[in-house]
Length: 128
Image (cartoon, rainbow, N blue to C red; front, side):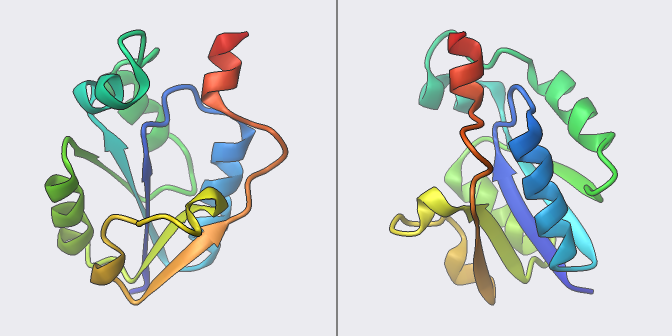
């Protein structure tokens, strides 16, 4: 089985997220999506986030046909543990990570970069 991993907070889903999942699924047989805990989102995005709580975000992600499994993580160590536990072969991240450290990259065979679709951004959506 060729397991693909991608992760994020996925607070307010938009077309860019769906295209990411579609692309990631096309690379393998099984797509696992990691989602940040509410505390981790709050620490990285600010006190007003997440807009949708973890339970709701997991429920929505679980309903997307491209996604085979949803995992939750609250730290970099937990993220790496989930990548290993799910036997991921490839990590898919946004192209904005091309010159940045991708957590877990040393644990998989390949890191694949997804080109963002237009100007979709949860932060921009919430900013109105």
